[in-house]
Length: 134
Image (cartoon, rainbow, N blue to C red; front, side, top):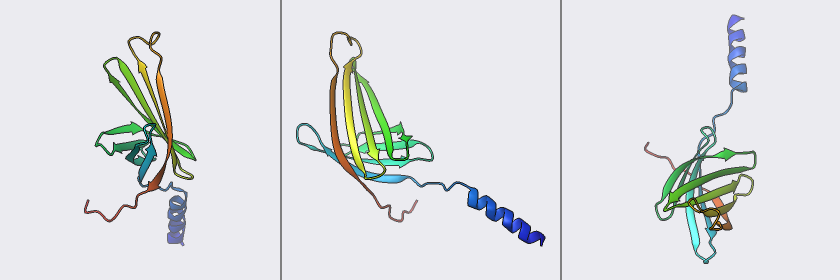
């Protein structure tokens, strides 16, 4: 009788423990204002709120992801020669559509130089991860 009691307790704990989500790998693309297709890949990990983003040209960055029930949003901010470039990505968890927005603004002369913005939409697809050696 005692062993059934412990079995019930263990089963109850396992049933109420959160399921750990595995990272999800995505391949995404959008067409920019010049008509060029821009491709990138993202690994999103809801458990750690981490995103690893890799552009097709090899530029990569890690970012904190903001996860909601229906979307994942993350951004990369770069400072170069007095210019702040903010690239923001938002991916739908429902239909895998994505939105890219960019803001370039002067850090040195924000009152004299107007920010430049762009926004594009695209699509992502899930990447199946094959068995790996490590």
